[in-house]
Image (cartoon, rainbow, N blue to C red; front, side, top):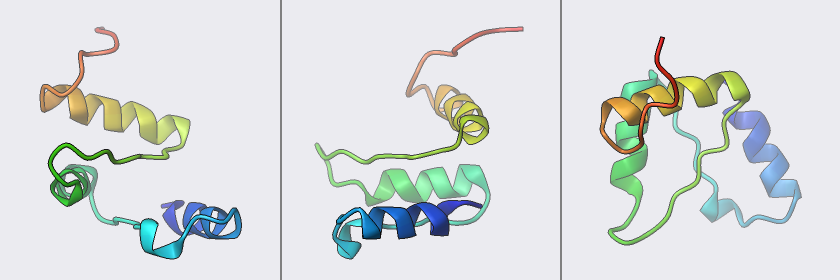
Amino acid sequence: MRAPDMANRLKYAGVATDRITTIGGELPAALATFVRSIPEGGSGYILPTYTAMLAIRRALAERGAVEAFWRQ
């Protein structure tokens, strides 16, 4: 939801626009698109809000990419 705002901030901070990509859509599909876009051995960066970070972390844990942060 806030991706265009962050992209604009990065642009004015001097990050080359060809290095800024926003991915919309529902989280699972957006995360899959993001992972596919990273070259093998490369790095990608997600800049979420705190609330979005919790959902992203949960989705990554479901994929087995990270350990669950906490359990209820």
